[in-house]
Amino acid sequence: MKQSKNEAVFQDEVLTRFELFKSLFLTLPFQRVKDTGTLLPFFAKQCEKGVDQHLTPDEIIKSFFDQHEEFSSEEQRIDLLFRFVQYIERQVVLFDAIEDSSFQMVGRGDDENMLGALIKNAEGSDDMRRKIVSKLKDFSVRLVLTAHPTQFYPGPVLGIINDLIDAIKTNDIHSIHLLLQQLGKTPFINKNKPTPVDEAASLAWFLENVFYKVASEIQSFIDDELDVDTEEVKQLIELGFWPGGDRDGNPNVSVESTKKVAALLRTILFRCYYRDFRIVRRRITFRGVEEYMENLQTLFYDNSFNPVEYPADETDNIISNLKAIKNVLEEYHNGLFVEIVDDLLRKVMTFGCFFTTLDIRQDSRILREATNYLIAHNQETTGMPLDYLALSEIDKQKALKFKELDLTVGEDADPLTKDTSGVIKLLKEIQRSGSERAAQRFIISNCQQASDILGLRQLFLWSGWKKDALTIDFVPLFETVDDLTRAADVMKTLYSNKEYKAHLKRRGNKQTIMLGYSDSTKDGGYLMANWSIYRAKIELTAISREYDVDLVFFDGRGGPPARGGGKTQRFYASMGKEIANDHIQLTIQGQTISSQYGSLDTARFNIEQLLHAGIISDLKQRAGDT
Image (cartoon, rainbow, N blue to C red):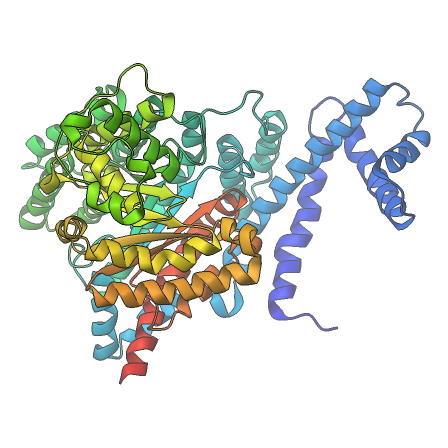
């Protein structure tokens, strides 16, 4: 059968190069590595034969060692098998690096560079350009990174992969050989179970090394190609973060770990800014910028290397100084090097002082118990009945008084109640340090009724927050098939509630609803889950439009198709006008983060696909309306 052009390119650029570079493993100066590489093909052949003969794994391994009597002891055999795994792991890394290095040449068929083609086509049509710019003014893609045990590569290995990609692109054999040696000595697993802060630090690698650069480059491309001001089309690419905030997903998350993760994200971001600022300072050595340069030097350095416990949000200060430098360059120095100032300015406008929004998530049952505790210990103050949890749903809603109090949790409270109260208070401090974008969403897992959302809002008002300054979005997560069936009725009740309606108005009449794919799949099977989610989206869109609420769907899609992943961009591009699709928000986790966002090229490709999907869906709907 004749190969297609893409198949031929893949054969030449990936498979053939992999076979060539793979031979380098046999030259690595490690003890017994050559023996491992020599024996592995024989072991693989034995496994194939054993499978054909329907042998068990134990029988296959025994038959292999019967032919290699030099491995006589149990310890020697286990050692060899372990070395096989190590060897294969590192060959997989090499293959991934070669594949990623050839990403641009291999291409992605019909999906390749669709965003660029769409924007290019707009150059010849003022009407299309106007429609695209209009869409982008209130459109964003939010990728929410979540910790998961299937995370394939740790940060140090990802760093090696990216360096390998660069070396392979230029066929730098010497560097490839050195990097393979580094790879051979770099562990792939941790001996100790990672803490929530460890998980956050691991995922932060992607923020620092991939998203920080790619988000700015894509924004810059769109600004330049469509000839729009950066501030006209605001933040197109948003990032969300669950490690350190997701209590429902990790019972080890605490107030202290949430605080540490928020500080970690801020510090990593400022170190990114500081690296870029050093380039600005090296190039812009002209008169008229000294004061602004000194201000920025102090800001970036202190926040990078001398962070304080409760820092201030310096976003406006940084932007003001960068704009002042830009003005001096344009007015007195012919705009020399203004592009590097623009690049840093765009990054600061995108990431502020927070880098990524830290989401908080907790199960509704835990939140109900926290509410029950505060009522039991403050009944007269709250004016709530002691049997609140036993009331009917209608009576619960009537019982909520929405008083503004500052209640404290005693030492007799259970740890989860203490944590709930503590993190609600902590959110104020996080917002002071990074604006409300640093942590503005509280997700209620297992959300079953309107009182779950209203009750959480009451917890905030009992914890020192004021109604007119409650800069928090309450996000119900509907997961099971039954919950999805009731979702529209729950939201209708909320939209009709006087207090919640006033809260939504202060939040710009925007409501985010999260839909869980994995739990609904477990509950009703793949087809039932996806049908239930589809129906729920239609019903939720209709009820939100009836109440003039801007609805945002946040999809807990994960990654693998069994969890609702697959061709994600096609999923969003196919949305009809009966489903709200003004924003795209989804979780990415595990191996999906490494495979789709582990390098600059793959991340750029996948983010552009999602942006294209959102734009093209809107354009198709408009065309259908005319």
